[in-house]
Image 1: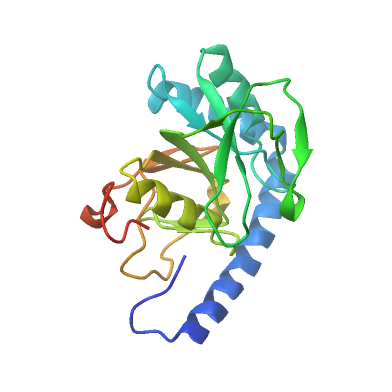
Image 2 (image 1 turned 90 degrees about the horizontal axis):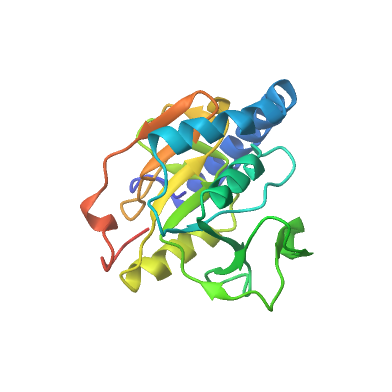
Amino acid sequence: MAGTGTSQPTDLAAAKAALRRDLRAGRRMASAALGPAAGEALVPLILEEIPPPVGAVVGAYWPMPGEIDVRPLLHALADRGLALALPVVVDREGPMVFRGWAPGDPLEPGPLKTLHPSPSAPEVVPDWLLVPLMGFDRRGYRLGMGGGFYDRTLAALAAEGRLPMTLGVAFSAQEVDELPIEGHDCPLNAVATETGIRRFSPHPSCAPGSEDPV
């Protein structure tokens, strides 16, 4: 995420770095304390309260160490007949692409210790997206890992009029009161944690095709 319009870029970078350090520590503690139970808790919450529509292509992600484990959810979505896709970094300065994936399909190592489908998997465009995050606030804004991959990807999709529904996924311990943002930042549609679902109001500038989508 970016910072407030009155802050200087160096101040923003320092503030975000400090937040990431604190949130990373909190995430590790939550992961150690809750373990697989947190990921399992996501399944009924999402399927009952905010399920993807029938026929949706669900863009997901493969969890990294310390992140809430979305793999039980991915299996449950696949069991419901939903098509899944995982992100692939093809350019560290550009948007990601998504390739189709189903439980049991092989994964290959990618940049930054990620795992993604093989190049032979079909490229798809998700219309319902699970978004990993480092932190989120009560307004639905997200702090990422710092690489800007999701910001660029969502901006590219929005510019094409294909902005997906965005559901952040995190431990409840990753919530903060308020993150520093800029005018072009967009809140997530909702966030799911092991304790429940939080829905947020959309911003007019975040509509597909807007000039400043993310």
